[in-house]
Length: 174
Length: 262
Image (cartoon, chains in turn orange, green):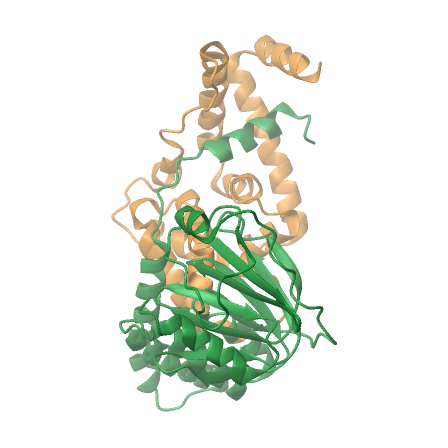
């Protein structure tokens, strides 16, 4: 059944959209809404982005729906507790530093910019799919993603020190 | 783009995200129940627009399905209801609605007719039936009517067990799996077949078949044309039998998996 097939992905989308502890409920409500609006689903259109759009909107509603005093912090709470998966401890230490810098930079992004990064990287959607999920024109997806990545680079720069980043990037290119 | 360290870091972070797991089966059940509850609201609206009527009709079916979910026939009935519903709706809605139901692990979607299908591929495997059965999480059914299979194979991810018999009339292939997914793109609705304890679905026409692994929802493990196929369930296990062109003979073979008490 479709619900079973897409439940895990819908759950991931709900979590990275900030649904937190409500993710399960958000997923259920999203599937019910998707079911009820099936007649608005264009035949032949890709189903996944269509469904994820409903999930993301539902997650946003859940965050907005009160008792969240600090919605901005809440929206990015899923970034807590991400560890690195490096086996080598020395590499892990270096990586942990850039990882936490990246997470800090992600937290500082304006909401719309973080959404587009979430869609492209954490939900693995292409530009067109991200446009469907977010309900934005493709050009907006492109420009906001560009701005978000620029800002993330700048954020990383500030937190790690410009030279350090330049060195790491140079090393990476080698 | 892949040489960009930020790009690499973001992808690595995505892979390391700690996403709490979700119970997919429980979610499916709760969703069906919530749809059924929402049905009452639709029914109480006096003037329904076309869209709402379609939704209401779908909800009525969902309600029936939600009730069935609590019985052991649930998947079979859901499949049959989906076929009936599909016939009643307009094509675009039909396409979407049909995606929501299936028989056990088999999902049915409207698709183009396939002119013909080659005989099913014979299974290649060195495994004995007992060894293969030990690799999967379910107790495989063995159709007594066909006897010992010529070969047995376990799919990657160990969710699917396949067996085949190669005889004078060609190859007969049987795939069984628990909790996983095959998608059939069929030009016409399948016919229900009475198997005694359960009902099966008979897909008379050649059709496109995608069989998925548990890990990858996007890339099918098997993607080919399939000939006439009978699908049924033994307990929680979904079985598809291909290579028997005669519906009654296929039903006889299916019944022989149900007789031995599995």
